[in-house]
Length: 458
Ligand SMILES: Cc1cc2nc3c(=O)[nH]c(=O)nc-3n(C[C@H](O)[C@H](O)[C@H](O)COP(=O)(O)OP(=O)(O)OC[C@H]3O[C@@H](n4cnc5c(N)ncnc54)[C@H](O)[C@@H]3O)c2cc1C
Image (tube, rainbow, N blue to C red):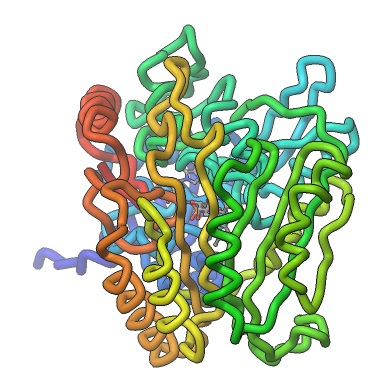
């Protein structure tokens, strides 16, 4: 009698055959380490792939991609799982966890870094700082360098030096045909363009190289105000952003902090409206620029000259896996009515943080040599998040984020930022019309069978 195997059994048996072909681990449903290995950084995401592969080398990645292609499976590369929420159903997919491919080398002469696929930002920031250099890192120390950069890369230094992806000089990746390639301006230039802002749709990246900047210190910190001043402070901050130099980046934010021990005592369990400021020019210039905000009388003021490496902790992003639900949208403007909507919807809600990042500067300037995310059209980017410790808490957060989005629909920009989109989006809302069509053509050329699976598919 022919034995009928369930789809899950077939997948498991198929995937086990991969184990003999790589040095790294292959884990399938039912294995002892399954629940630990399939976990994303965002603990609210329940990833149930056909199998998890943990490569030890670029050679392993070649084998995994070839195996998936031969067996009708797809491949989803993952660095940390910060962006796991938008991935969706992974039933027919091998989740390729890249955390074992680690390492940073900095060349102080050329002011560049070479980084292996599983490296997180804090590792690059610390190594670059040893040489008096800074990278275009984001707010979180443990976001993956590759996922962040493929999606764009919005840094505290971005208004001066632009989107992170546009500072990339070379990328090594395994494409869907199982070939390890090194792409740059002269080799596979179309693919190089697509990888710089087109997300993880084009292959499994094994290493990335990018420019660093000679910055040792910045004038930066946070101005804290009581949350009942939220509308006033956000309106003052919004007006202050007009005409700032590119060296100054800032965020207007409402924070409703839970009573957790890991949060410093003066702010634990309390709510605030804050302005985060990062000025990468001189201290005296910074003081002058920040003066109008200081004039508002913050209850706490931490803005001072700090080592650039300290920027990794300025935003107080969690430095270990947490369960969270959130989402982001770009805004064409931030008028008084929108600020009122943000305050009314957020204060007293289950949201932990609602932040508005000021863009423009070099982030808003497109150049011919840039990649698929050449520039942001919108001047502001909003991100709202809450803790999803239980499914019910997660749903309450989701509802509030949806309410906030609806309240701001009038000002929502046509295109948003892939890295801040934590829900499924129509791909046409992630890139400009021209970029979207070019990305589609490149995807079809390099991955006609759609083997490579990103959290934001084309
Ligand atoms: C707390 C927090 C703070 C953040 N701050 C910022 C910020 O300041 N600026 C900013 O721009 N973004 C920020 N982000 C968003 C962050 O950049 C995205 O979530 C990004 O996708 C995370 O990359 P990752 O590799 O850590 O996550 P993952 O979930 O591992 O990866 C996300 C996607 O990137 C792709 N990818 C990852 N690795 C590879 C690879 N080796 N090869 C091919 N594709 C790959 C895949 O498509 C994957 O689905 C923040 C996110 C969080 C949770």
